[in-house]
Image (tube, rainbow, N blue to C red):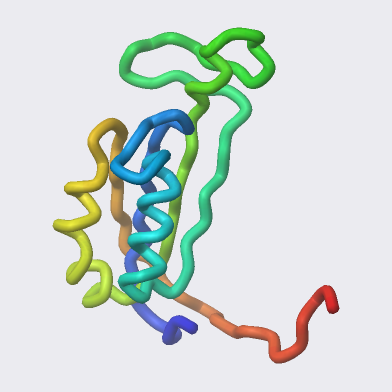
Amino acid sequence: MLNIGPALKVTIHLNRDTGAKHGFLVDDILDFLQKRGIAGATAIQAFAGFGAHRRLHTEGAGDVGGEHLPVLIYFIDEPAKIDAILDDLLAFVTDGLVEMHPTQVLRSITATEKVIT
């Protein structure tokens, strides 16, 4: 759980099919963030997008273009925790874009009961 107050939000822009040492880069980054104690991370896959190569990739395109869809990974944590992992994180990203912005945690709560039992 995050403390209320100043934090940093990091967003990583990748392609779904970007490979890494142990599979796909998105999976390796999520594993890295979890092992390094980041409070939480979310990966969202887009249904369409284009990047530096200016080629539009869409879901259901019927070709490999559909496999090259954008993925966003974002996470929020205390500045000290992000500073401690930033160099290693940047070394992971071999193709894509990483951005970071200051933010403010207004509420952070974890329910004691499960939503689905």
